[in-house]
Length: 282
Image (cartoon, rainbow, N blue to C red; front, top):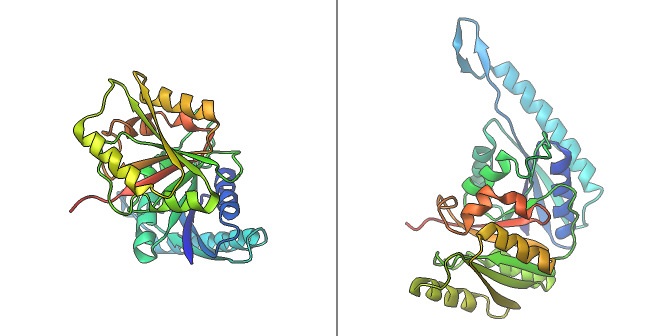
């Protein structure tokens, strides 16, 4: 049985992501966990400078949140597949800390989130919580669903790759499983702003080719374009259904290819973004 974590702030964007996940895995045996994180502080009378949790306040928020999550699970159970079950989790932590704690307690196969939270700022395509989850979550794939995007079986998934990071054995497991489930083609896109591959990049490309054996795939190369413009143009020209990246933990911002993911997610706002987390080498 697969396990999927669904962080929610009870916004419409979060509900859309939940609906997407239910449809994506409608025929699978899945346990979905609705997670809500909050951080409550209360000032003590004697010291207005130090904020500490007030026990009564914490208990009230926890009970109210648990009730809302139970109602949410009941509501979505009416739309769920016959093999879907639901759990809830509440943590008095910042969101990323809450997710990582939940992952340590109950290993998950996927996290599905909306690209925005309650604010729904139309000028901000990806909210700060979404970015933080993509960068700082521990060893679990993250699928971010843009607002108003409904599920359709992906016929083509673009894997944007710089060939600068050597793959570990499990990096592509989720992506390959998804492609096999829906018969999707994986299009590996490399954009060289200066042209040419180094020896190590050629090795990593060959390694990637080997790992994708048995899955329909092809390699595509663009040169002398900025990475975000190249990816955006490729997605638009082909009508691809999803964009995927491999994030080696703590190098997301520095990596040539993944830096634009962090700074230019608006370019990919029309399709879901899948981030595959690569664990750090010990």
